[in-house]
Image 1 (cartoon, rainbow, N blue to C red):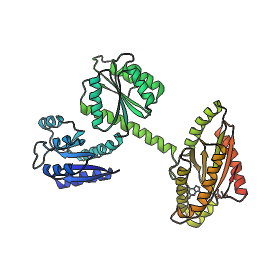
Image 2 (spheres, rainbow, N blue to C red; image 1 turned 180 degrees about the horizontal axis):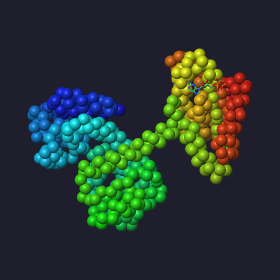
Image 3 (spheres, rainbow, N blue to C red; image 1 turned 30 degrees about the vertical axis):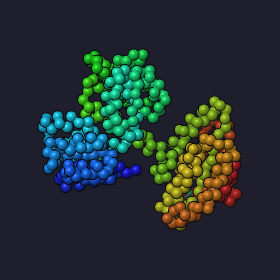
Length: 411
Ligand SMILES: Nc1nc2c(ncn2[C@@H]2O[C@H](COP(=O)(O)OP(=O)(O)OP(=O)(O)O)[C@@H](O)[C@H]2O)c(=O)[nH]1
């Protein structure tokens, strides 16, 4: 879905830069050079957000801001003025942010804000406070930035909401609450969840100077004293969500094969080891297949290494389709594995046979060089607690499949 942004700016060069920033961040952009043009566009279109210049020929004192605010369009104000009067006028409105056009940094900041808004739609934030009024205030601030918001009235309820909503990634918690305080809640969350997955921001109206340290020592990532300034709140929140994002990106890169984007060997071993542990407790057997492209060396030799890469990527796409509920990985080179998470042994074998047949019949249409390729598969199902042992056993079957003529499943 492309998101539409309204840029209200009378200086064409600035409007052009803003449009470039918006388009490179995935938006489609409309430009209005005046308040009158903006009103016409707002009446005709739905906008995801707007960037509004404070001074326009027909709106010299920020009069364009209520135009987008009234239409419930999340609004970022850009202004060349740094004076207090401008700031006070801007702060009267529930805007997303205001940015002063001081230097190049301002446009980089705008870009970050435009990239954050669509991302925020997928970020769940839990607000824990016993005051309904404060909860509503914080939730309204969050909703303005398009976060998904959940609420709880004390630490105990906060934990329950967290357990029922595992996607929550940020918790904003008051300290002084009945049943369980914010500091106690922090400690409990950190016992259960790593700070790579959940960020906690503590808030309190207390004057006790040691409270920020107590929050931080109990696992909070940040602390705010009430009453807080909305601008500071947003800055701290964004920094914490950005940090979680960066950690998730690094984690994904560490677990993903760069060429095929399939999970890599490291991730496969980590995940299967976890599953094998729980299977051992239930005395269940495990089912695994090793898959290898036939005569891959001659594909490289005949068409070149890049064409070989195309084959690997095309095969990976099929893996994702055929084994979306299982654990698949590129172990290295032209070797892949599937650890089955569901289905009976017969169903797993049938699925592999369908996969093999599908590739034999369709592989020639999958790459630019129209290379026909096939795969051999070694399959095992056994009570085994170590993934290496399962892979070794499947590799023996794979060797048999190659010996028996390739393009087959051997179990
Ligand atoms: N294009 C490309 N080739 C790779 C990559 N990784 C490994 N290879 C090549 O994969 C080939 C594997 O060849 P072999 O192990 O001899 O196996 P094969 O030719 O597939 O023969 P069989 O497995 O016996 O059917 C080697 O030529 C490697 O250079 C890669 O990331 N990209």
